[in-house]
Amino acid sequence: MNTLKDLKNKFYNLDPFGKIIAITAVIFIIDLVLTSLLRFNATKYFMLPSGFTDFILQPWSLITYGFIHSDIWHVVFNMLFLYYLSRIASNLFKTKMILNVYFLGIIFGGLTYLAVANVSPASFFDIKNGVLVGASAGVSALLVFVALYMPNSEIRLFNVFNVKWKYIALFFIGFDVIRILMGINQGGYIAHLGGYLLGYLYATKLKEGKDIGLGFEHLMDTVATWFKPKSNLKTVHRKKRKGEFAGKTKQEFNTFNNQKKIDLILDKISKSGYESLTSEEKEFLFKAGKN
Image (cartoon, rainbow, N blue to C red; front, side):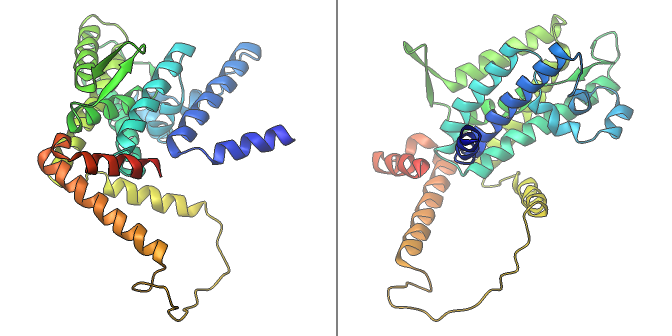
């Protein structure tokens, strides 16, 4: 019981992307056990079918397919990429925005897969009567988002050399196009292209000062409230106490000022790019992302 309680506490202490990775791993293990031992496919109703009629009967699969993976390398590769991309993006942007990019990438990738499967001739794309699984479209969206918004940010590979994310993005986009033309896993790589496109649109619009994910964010916030227990507590108003600033405690006031500073720095990045920041501004953002 203590072990279960410890695991539960560790889960709740994870950030949102840590929770996504943990949930995805648990789903993969459960599916693997049930399929291997009981010959029972527990996830078939959560995979995204290629047929539009089948999709209408299970519309939730447009998101749930992103939590299901075909094999161990599939899940490990996607979750590792998700881990690194979410960390670097969360240093500059609020977590909700990065979640928007990820989940909209999954949705957009799924819609691209459905569109191609139901509109294109079968002689060119052999993806009819299939299913789509994996978080790759969401990861692809994050990859292009990071590569476009922070083109000179880097990842250290094999603890030997650094590679800029923009070159990694170009490599995978080109490799996916080649594999589509060769007829290799066309459905999966077509979904990748949908994710790439979403990441491109999100980053370019954000540079113009427009967050295209706000509507989706508000929708998810509304859905989240459905699952929160209602409180019987009532709001009461108190008098302003000594040590408060504009109705806020000193700590709240400092938090408010720090957020305003972060917003100004992000606005500077959107206009002039990350490299335009001073060393002090970069250090401030880095520390803010740690909190």
